[in-house]
Length: 318
Image (cartoon, rainbow, N blue to C red; front, side, top):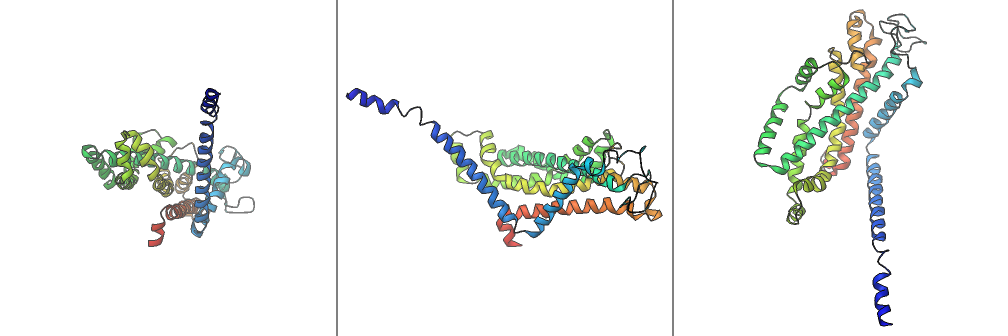
């Protein structure tokens, strides 16, 4: 009887014990994420400018996604253009027509797809490069940090637009060329910010404790440094997107964009070639220019709001 009572407690709870902590840990992690998202949105809503920027971006993004339903899939066609060339705004064509007779409103909606996609992808590439360089330079230090930061300084002092034009000129004219040209020339600012944050994180005591417990370089950077710099990276991404959209529009205006796709910068280039400036056809120039300005402003407002939410001390000093 004594043997049975000794065996029962040791064998009965064994299958149940591992399952309960695992389930509770996952539920706690989900609850923490939900709480973080709720708290972020509650604080973000206090920034009126950030809400205005977010609303503008949502409307423009929805228009870009549903462009085939809103303006039709043939709005970019030159051969099936419904109107006469260079018509002024009217009931049939609220923004007028281009030199081929295409509806400028439809072209503006379709151009949002290219401009937003190029801006987002270029910003992601730029921030990814800057984050990788910044974390590794802040972690390894020594000769590696010296060399990589001198390269970063060289990119900082060189005009970004000139480098992007040089890359776009020697490569084939495509959207991926524009994305690559913007991404590989705009990362130094992110790299410097992330490196400074990495140095601050690695000076904390728990990093020394993790190293004493056998944590390697990859473990320290991925599990301890990266989560702490992600708020900065997120805020920086929203700010970089607006610059990437402006750079894409500039490259397209200079004739270095993809000639087979319609973008806002490409519309400005077409208007210049069609003589809209000298002819006074303002409806050909104003809509794409205003669209670029509104999207760049909206991303900037969102970025400032995100930055203030993730760094409350920044908001207190403003």
